[in-house]
Length: 362
Image (cartoon, rainbow, N blue to C red; front, side, top):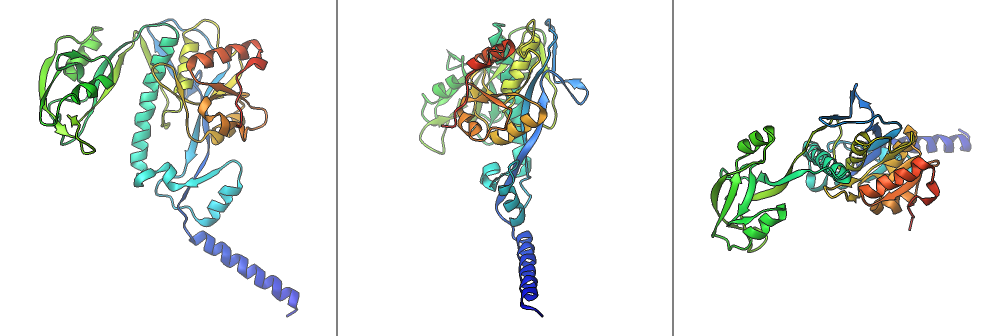
């Protein structure tokens, strides 16, 4: 056999062996890729994403698209060939498996957590939007969850409205922990609460939960110190002056909060926020309208540009990463609050794009 032919045959066999080994070798990585984008002003699966009743709404134009990221499942074992291909591909990103599923979290646990975060982001989006429009929203402190086996189990329940602790009025969720930790472990603390069923009935009747009952709980010692605990997580429940429903399935996590809030603002105000432009974005949002960072910004930029977006509302804390690899034709707009976003949209609508707050790679 000629030497050249033998060399080529040997090289081919080695390459095949390496490919086979690469397919068989599993690596502790997962893959992220651009997911679908959804216009919060439009429809998904044949019904409006934002459904508002009990208040006048106005026609809208253009796009305010939320963006998503696809990830491989917790049980999927990526092989070496897939990892190398992902590292080389521009539209995908390979990350350590623990980045997406920390502490051995299962796909089911991750999905449940994402669903809870998505639900909370919707509530915060509604509150932030109505606050931006100066529409009052009533709020109250409630029992968000009760730890199994804790002193509060079977005494307090999720949804109970907390009126006071030891006679001191409770106005914020943080007030509960402050008042409980004034005690030493083993001492009694008295909660004045309106049971969840009574609170729900009052809300349905358009009334504020009144009255209530006193519940005495003996505090326990926290596992991470000497402070007193009762074993509950306090949260905030809101009563809206009219109905706002967000209809979107198969999406999780908190990162659509900003775009939901802007969609609500647009539908509740005359004219339109976009001026007919295609705008996408991302960002968590809290009740006060503060925009927070998200994960997978690079994938969301690619997905947004692929869908046709020309402008991308970018959380300030994600700006550096976004600016380091921005798809051509997409303008990044830095935002820290919902007010920043509405002002930026006004500039886009008027064509004053030179004055837009931009992102820097530094």
